[in-house]
Length: 453
Image 1 (cartoon, rainbow, N blue to C red):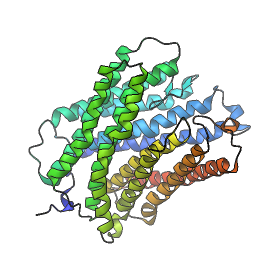
Image 2 (cartoon, rainbow, N blue to C red):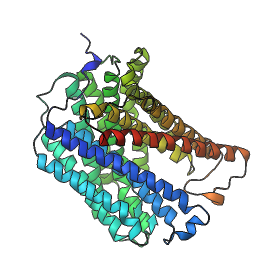
Image 3 (cartoon, rainbow, N blue to C red):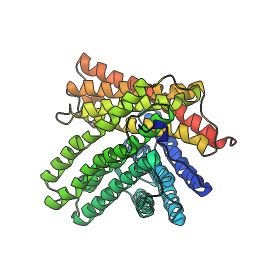
């Protein structure tokens, strides 16, 4: 008999688990809020007259570094902490609290670091850096916190025998995401111990985070797939897969991540072969996501009209699928170093973000807060998703006409109408997605600050 999709969910049974999960969620939302404030500072730092009152040199890139780290690294890892908390047993609760407290302290230090002196921003890939002690200490403390929650997840979930059916499948998916994160942590330490001292700090941090950053993407992709299956189930879609098949497919999605340490074993961290192989791993290693993704898409297409209270969840799932798919397709269009590259990773990042937004809507009532079922909550995923789709399509179009990556203003060389039109679409999409992001923050913060149900 076919397993009904309603079985794909994780039950939050214990109060201590709820409190810890709420703390991780609060950190995740706070990181998004702080990143939004820094996006405003980005705008002000480029505004004539206003920028003259900012005493820090190159504050634009300083604010950009903190904005990116909060909106991607802290947000994603905090939400991963939430998922790992609700998918593990009650063992080692103290370790769980230590992890989230360290992550909070580190995030606060990262957030205030630009206001303590010159930031010396380094725009390297994955985790851009402010080359200053305060920021580096904050990043280290937050990283230790995330490392602890990864270790706790792996230790406490060594056995999942007490769970069955769809719940076992989703908990296995969360556990697989923790395995990928542990591999990423191992590669970071490996690179740190292998790299020599360098005068060029951008190059140093580029190589420091290259292997681990590529590997961490498997964590985000696996957790997103878990969330897709969960949200589809809640939305009333019937995913025509047995839980054992889902476990097999999620394990298949994890398998390519084990190639990452093999690359470091075969090639020196600084070698061109190492860089090329990690790029190839990222390009083809996520192809196993296609099969479970297709089953989710088919289930959603065949599902009927959902209850109005669950529309925010279903809409977020649909928008997430579209953005992640678009980002994946654009990834195969990359040729050279141009803005097609950020079009690819923005699509992928936003796909994961929209999945996490949908799960936030779903989890709020389970954690004791008001169910976000307003018209704004139903519209928000589409507003945010449509804006981001415009953003990445504009970038992809402009990249096809040679607009280079990591340049701004006159340095972009926007000489043709096609280039200007593409970047104009990108800018308009950015504005629309910002509105969608603000709506999400307002809805969730109001729920967290309001009375419990």
